Image: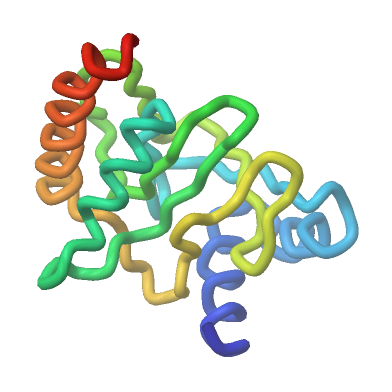
Length: 155
């Protein structure tokens, strides 16, 4: 990514903060992680890491649009997909967590990891998010693949 793309990503992501300037300062001079409220510009669907990584891999197939921002939390073993805000939070499934208005999400800056958080697909500043229908289809396919593999892997 070019510097312009990094800067647009920073501005887009920081816009979700109550104080964007403080958010950017925290990324550069503090712990490197900012708490941002979901529900205004985006929500986050968090899934177990094996499911999330396989899902993201499926979303990178040829002919598919570039996936939206995706964050991995290696300490919690979770992958977070940034999706359009949906106050109804209609995502249901074992191990799924949905952050919408009133929920806070810890995020590093788009240009580097911080502690246990890292962007797999950083925001590019255009506002592109995961399309819910496409994400749901990829999650179902990945879940089916993991169900088939589980007996083979002894899990």
